[in-house]
Structures are given as structure tokens and as C-alpha cells.
Amino acid sequence: MRMLLSCAIVVGLVLVATAAPQKKGDKGKAAAIDKDLLVGKWQTPAVKAVKGAKPPAREFTKDGKCYLGSPDGKGPRLEGTYELENDNLTIKWAGAPGVPGEVQKYKVTKLTKTELIMAVGKRTETWKRGK
Image (cartoon, rainbow, N blue to C red):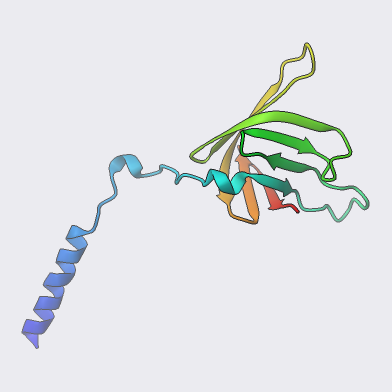
């Protein structure tokens, strides 16, 4: 019995010792976000206190363009480009003639088929996949 217990302990120690250790450079490094999941239309959840108002929608295309505006596409709409590197999302909005555009930088904290959560400082934005 002691022999069996000793063998189990030794095997356990060998398994723990041979497990792939995490490199020092990998600690705190964010996992890459799947760029393909970002492509599509995203909407903010409706605000219950504001009746009749449609929340804005974002659209990200495969060719690196993005749009922000009314979800039905009938109202005004901002156009820009985006880059997603690891979990860093940079959006460059086009400016009006003679006016420089704006650059927004987000940290993507969650991206699934149905949900996009982005953070800027302490502020968090939650978007749901649109139709």
C-alpha cells in the first residue's frame, strides 16, 4: 500500500514539474481577439427611460471600415476605419472638410458572437449583435 501511494506521489510530482510553465513575458499579456467576430452590426441596449429613441448602431466591415449611426441607416452616420491588434481597438473617424477626424482607442474585454464589451479608462460600453 505504501509502495502504491509513493508511486502515485512521484507520478504526481513528475506531472506537475513537466507541465508547460508560463513564460515571464506571457504574464499579463492579453489573448488575441478573433477579428472575424468583430465584423457585423452591433447595437447598444435600449434605454428604458427614453421611449421611441433608437440607440445607435456600429458596423465593422471586413475591409477595415466602421460606421456609427442610426440602426436603420436613415439618419446621419459617421464613417471611419478601424484596426484590431490583440485586444486593442483603434477607430479613426473621418472629419468634415477642413476639420480633423477623431481617434478613439478601446480595450476589448469581451467579444463573442453576440456580445462586444469595450473599455476606455473606467467607462465600459456593451454592444449586442444586431440584425
